[in-house]
Length: 125
Image 1 (tube, rainbow, N blue to C red):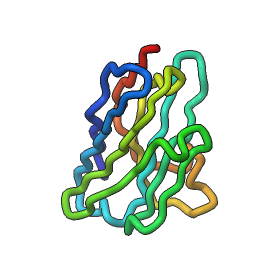
Image 2: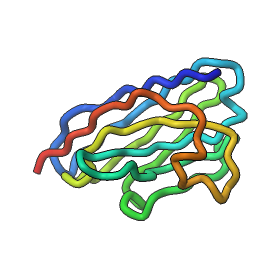
Image 3: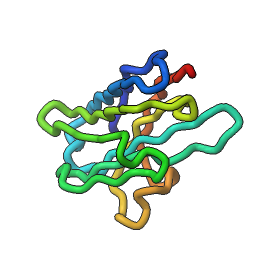
């Protein structure tokens, strides 16, 4: 069993930056692919980014490519999402998720076994 806790959300002006962190409990963190998803009011949950268990591969949704970067520290059971050049349309609740996931399922939220409670990110125009 893995518990995930996100932090770092908040209110920022358009063009600004935020760094989200996700702390994981449990001894199997280094085995899991870790992902970030977001959900805005009235919209479906959207894939944002993911990072392989070793950290060697990263994946990004089209809407955040070039602006967001995900990284992980397996020694500290932590994964992070650095968000730059934020836009009002980035406003959403951001979730950290993890699991043993096939590459083809990286973008599918249903493939992830473990989820945090989310952290709110609000970008003002």
